Image (cartoon, rainbow, N blue to C red; front, top):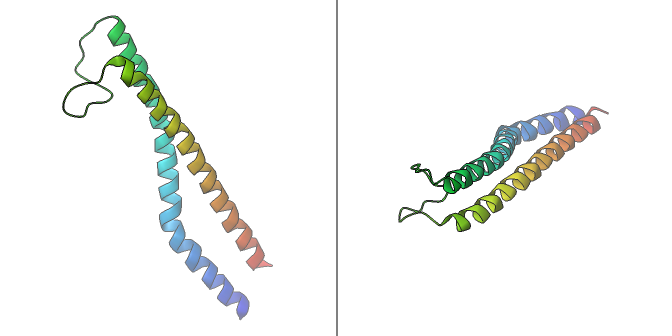
Length: 111
């Protein structure tokens, strides 16, 4: 009887947390990882556009009052790209640890 109660508790806890934690971490880590590369691509594109003096109506950092000079945008964009990359990797590691903990808890209950 205790084994069945422990199994019910395990499934209710991991099911409820799994509904929120697993999709949140998976989507956010993937999004941050992809955004890090897109930020670098946009920064390189911005540099090329600035070097060849091509007028394109976009900016990486636009706060509504204008556009930052290119020498401010590049370091900020690269900083955010690094933060997105390591943030995505860290969230992925947290997700893997959560899944490993659930697996270990399930194995323990099954014994």
